[in-house]
Image 1 (cartoon, one colour):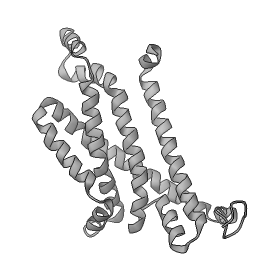
Image 2 (cartoon, rainbow, N blue to C red):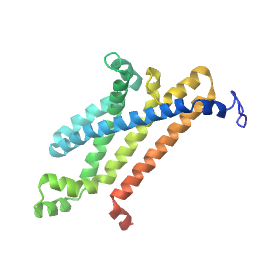
Image 3 (cartoon, rainbow, N blue to C red):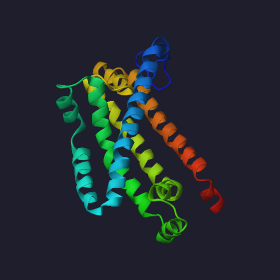
Image 4 (spheres, rainbow, N blue to C red):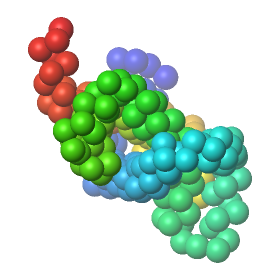
Length: 221
């Protein structure tokens, strides 16, 4: 296996890459779709749970306990169990979503807890309803912490999607698995490199969103 070579035994055989561009693009697209779908669904589940925990603190512990259980279930075991009762894609999204809930609930609650009490008192003194106070005052202040949780969830899911390749829904993980099974380094390297680049790209994009959404932080610095 030669680093500078360009053949089947090289780390990346560019002729193979050129002939399999559609396959690589399909794998990348599937990886993105699974990641976005799982994180969006996880956010839609985690946000109400976090707001519920803020309203009734006694439910926060049980919510975290359930989230921890879901987070600690081996992903491969969960995939195998769910594909017996539903489609591969649905099973993959549900399993990946379950790994985001603990991260997102914690960060949403932590973000809302970071809002100073005097700011809340001022909002109430100005006649803000609880919903308006949440949307106009608390969420903007909590946004950096919430987005940090989303960034962590995205990177986590991008890594876990590759595991889904074992059941046939792995995006770039399918390329990695193909390379391992055939002892062929090119698809393995392409899958691994694109997975890393995808994680970095999403993280930087969300960091950009955070900077745009919180201009007061830049002014403060």
